[in-house]
Length: 270
Image 1 (spheres, one colour):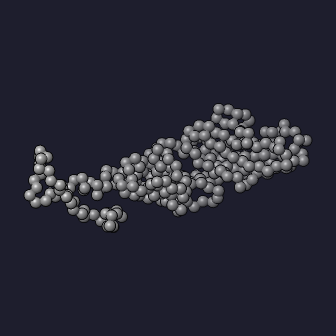
Image 2: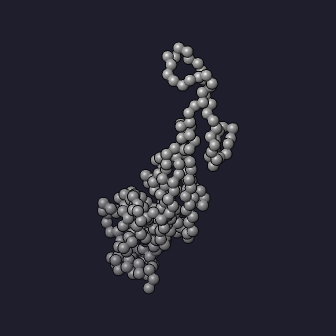
Image 3: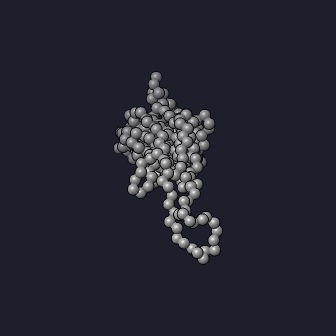
């Protein structure tokens, strides 16, 4: 007996009260191209699982089976089925992760479709970090790899500090996910320090790669500019004055000895 057979027998025994005459001549099927068959959501959010059906009888209703193989019988604070047939799960927790099934039934049989839901916790524990430990200077850039090999359908999501989300090939002002899944963050600030997690999921399971990034101080160029003592022209002494003998002084800072690519507009860090 395979898993599908077990589900079918479980449904048939669970819903024996269905009137055969009502569905005797109807047919229905679930669209396999339905979007959102694999979803990743953040702990505490609200999730909508969708299922699109094609039927000859508008009375055919969408039902939902939970990961523990129980059917959603009635609405609750946690679960409800919308008028469109969506399964709505409120305030999701890690225990809501798993394989859900959208199903419909007629006299001639049952059709069902699996959907995978993965919940990511808001704060990872120390054992969850299995990637790189990156130390980068403020103002510089860094990249983190996340190459995913998966059967379809699948979903890959990057979670940044404060649980900001970046999807594949998505781009913000300073962060970008490349086509190969690599995350690139530019012009680092102290706020960019923290957890970076790449989470990939398909119908058969889920995997996550989590990195820790530390952002230190200021760029070397900024530190040197602040610590260098200005070179005053010969004959001008440093000190306080009354301002009566004010003289305009053109202060020139020496070019820093710093590896990089020089342009006509200054120093461009590698």
